[in-house]
Image 1 (cartoon, rainbow, N blue to C red):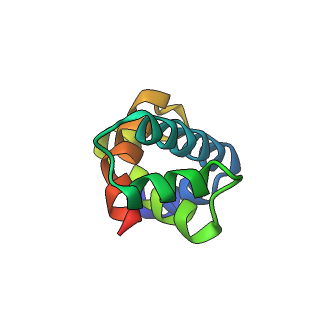
Image 2: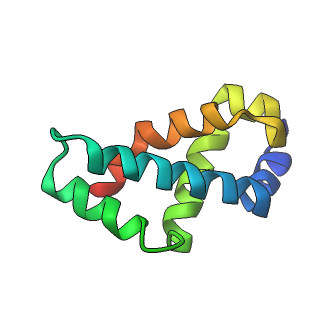
Image 3: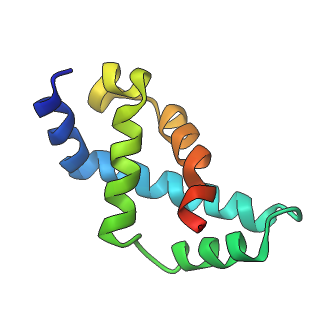
Length: 95
């Protein structure tokens, strides 16, 4: 995909909604994991209160489209690929 197409994907509302749900799913896993830090659990609880703020969601969308598999699939990227990226950067968002 071209850079322009990737920017449009970052801004695509249905794509961002899928990222939002992946974030909620990862947050639930963090809360259920006894080994998660207190800081990670606090961040997870904040995410489960509602939609992520625009900055967090945009950062996640950028990270998702930077993944070659997602970039190649575009809007047809699998939910599991999106969740994989979100889970991989969750700790980074906590810091």
